[in-house]
Amino acid sequence: MHMEGPAAGDSAWAEAPLCSECAPDDGGVPADDTVLVTNHESYHTLAGVAQRPYDMSANPPHLLVPDAGTFTRIDGTATDGGYLFTGVPQGTTYYLRRNRTVVVTDARHVEIGTDLLGRPDAILTDIGVTPLELDLSNLAPWAPYGSAAGPSSLELVSGQLDVAGDVYFYDEPLAGQTHVTTTQAESWNMGLPFSVFEAARGDALYVNQLGAVDAGALPNGNALTSLTVVRSVELAPFDFTPDGVTPLPLSGVMQSVPTQALSVDWRLPEYTARAAQIHPSATPQKPLLVVEAGAHRPESGWVSYSGTLLRLELPTGASFNFTRLLSYGTPFPSTWARVGSAVYPFRYRDVLPDGSGRTFSMSFHNMIVRDRVEGLAAAPLRPRVTPPRGLTIDGLDANVQRQVSSPSPVVAWLPPDVGNPTGYRVALHRYDESLGYGRASLQLYIHVPGSTTQVRLPPGVLLPGSIYFLLVTAMDVTGHDVKSRPFNTLGGLPQGTADVISSFFTTP
Image (tube, rainbow, N blue to C red; front, side, top):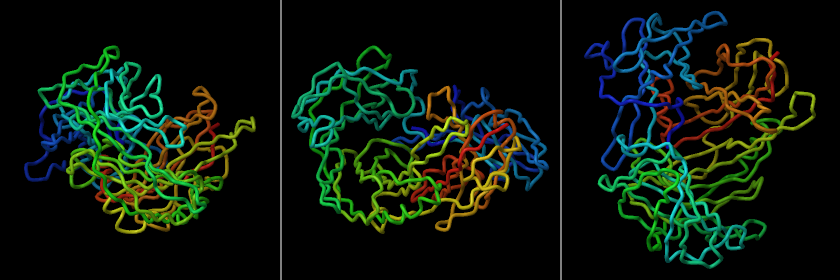
């Protein structure tokens, strides 16, 4: 799956130098008043990492240079290595924009590529869901959704392709069932559309069964369970071209999996105490502890999702120290990463400023800590970074609803009182009635370095007569380089994020 980055389109691959205009000994950095923007996708496989340039010609980047409250647009020239921009003096801070993503930087060379899993030469289809033909035996006794034993589920994961997805049954297996034979099932790929499986290239799948296991008791004495992998089978490499009609045949004998212990000391009160910093209306939801697999990770961090190993959910608003020795199943090779995330989501509510009196409500994963499982177990889990403080729009408190007077307002904040952000991400959301009541759509991401605490929204982003809100995320990510490599350094571990949310604001 993609890390967050510029929106993708059709691509064409060609081996090319990063910058034909650069001097041989300048480290790939353009000279004088030029800026080079490149986009190389890094594909991670068992054999290593392969980089390929990404063709941006369908949606080329452009620069916006701030100028006394406005912006001067600069378009680039396509080169073998990317796009070259001239007329940007050394030391100038500019906004690099491509699609709905902006990076604020003064770097002379910006690489906006992302990390992916799987072979770079994999053939991508346009199919996101495929029917299945299942013949799986030796399952752990099936526990239907809603049963006291907790829900069983199946997940598909590939170590060769960017494929991972749950199995959806049209008719769920019966309680206690240990052999499933059916064509009444399908799977959605969580990342890109499905790739073509080629046996000659070793393309295969794991089929994992997740089930509930005892996780002790809550402070009130109620039983607690977690979901983990309890059975698995690794299928032999096979040929299959997803077409949305032909079922993908999956047949095998499920086997028990090795287990690993995870010691957790989660200081939940340190999260709930921050609710008002997120927004005056913020209320804590269900804390979530997840351990995920990551195939073929680089040593520097985490590339992408490759299956769930553990999922534990605590009660809504839990605010106690959660200390526990947990256990989770590990069907994958030891070379795969095991990355844990401690997530505390909060719900945001605000009255729509349209005179209707209706309330908009949405949950966000507002405070997250992520690290390799060894790191999670090494010290108490507490916020690595807390929400930015003092959010304003054109100098006025962003917690108060108002109409903005500028078509390009300035969003500003103060650094968090815990943590040292390596960067901030400003997300602009627009309430959109056409999507259905209570729905908002992302309009723009703006990434800025950790030393920056204000940004001006680019022109043309705000539409007239519209309703918006902002979400500003403080990011403390190991090795994060917002200025030069904003997206393929987002996987560094350990990392933490925390959000602050504005109230609604409107445009005239």
